[in-house]
Length: 313
Length: 292
Image (cartoon, rainbow over all chains, first blue to last red; front, side, top):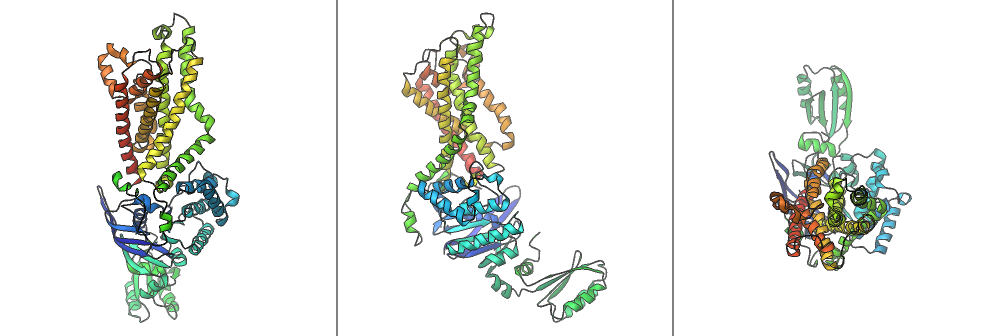
């Protein structure tokens, strides 16, 4: 196992005692893309910070390539590449120099660093922008440079913390392609995200975490099957009065898993929409149906079933 | 949160996962290479801005010498500054100005960049992720700043020979003491920069200049020798807690031995102690900032 996280906890003791990580156990296989999925404040970033030697755990251990990151941080860092949430490119250096000096920091000679940097510029389609300063780059491009820089020293594990935060949809797709490309290089990737689509599209395996704990672990497909991922119908209704009879009628149906009132209407969860949708629409129209959103079985529905709350809160 | 956890990689990496043994065979050599990589990056950035750098370190001593040792003496006896300073004023302030140059380089090279790297840009993150202990990342900052301080201090010497109306009595024969004092003072200034850069909130960095940097400079025996403070005894004792005093007096002992100065055996240990104390404080602040 290239990454081993054992009984990891992190408690911030201040005026308010915050348990950011509450006993996480994870193991990553060489070469896999692993998604850490959870809402903001679930403990994703703290877990990554500990694994990348920037935060000390309260208890537990993390080993990267067999090296304990708390006991031997400097040693472990040679096997770690990090793309943080924010742009941390060296503002005083050009794109090429950012890559070149990163290589030098990791012990590359001048010629090794030079050829590796040129190779990366080519791989990430950045050659034209080699002399540009980071402040002139768009968010998507800066992110690409950060990924190139993070893998420049050929780390065993790449940590991506919320890689698509603040990216436009097009840049996000480009980033996904770049991450997919890393699979061919045998780099293990651990990414955190609160976008279900991202985890679904990229990750071989996913851990859903909330309140610092792993709630579910497995491939996206397996999670959907295990947790009986179902279709979710969200109705926006004009009138909320006297919903109760409708709710109990729906709950009584064989093909409905659950039905509950929400802030602006009604949420129904069911294994399939076949045959159900017309009935639902008809029932809801009596309450002034304004909008209907249908979420197909996905990690998102798994998450909501596990935690009872939306991910993007 | 101490540096002991950061020192564990000195030994060679052995017995870790298969397939990685080859990479680890270069062991601790990477530590040195990484350190020099950081230094090289800083040099590259400095070289790109070399003229602004020279102006930054040279302007203040240049103007100071020009006004106080060139203009004022020419104004003649009617000017209290000129007569008060006497013929030796240039000689008195040469080491003082070198100390100021060292001080300001230390702060400009460590405190200001650090405070912005810790602040909005978080550029420090990439350095922190280098394969070397965090204390070495901080040490690199201090060493690089010390190099700038030495250049800044040496720049004052030719100015002091050409600008003053009355010749300056400098003696550069005590080069060994000069080198020692220069290096120690520069490391001290870098450590002070580290303390300010890592402890002070970036928003308050301007305030720190006014309430700490300026007072310790003015009361740092820059413009007068420490021995002459004997008429104001409380001040003479009080300034002993000011590290700049030992920088000025050390340079006085090395460059202008003709002027009354502290003995070297008092100066050198004081410089070492202040460097160690400030270095430790700065490192603690640095670790606190990068390691949560």
